[in-house]
Image (tube, rainbow, N blue to C red; front, top):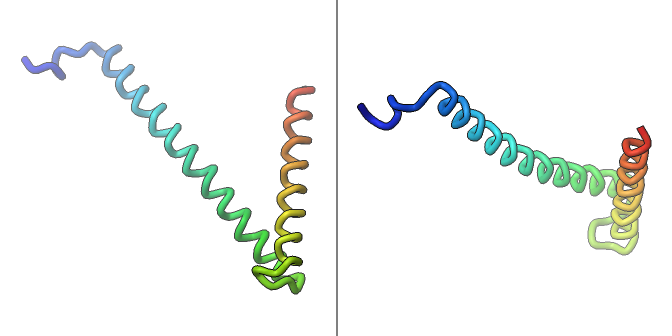
Length: 84
């Protein structure tokens, strides 16, 4: 009998569960980075649509203001979640 045949149902379930948790954690990290990359891309597109050229002071200011607004919105959402 090999080692895998000796595992009980509970041990198999624990192994599968551990693998799923690890997979979800790794996927969650990637999703967060993808979301931030998408936000930066959308911010750059929006700032360009306002007429600001990439690398200019106006573009940098626009990107900065958009990030501040996003941070403020997230802080507000966190406060609302805490109050619930």
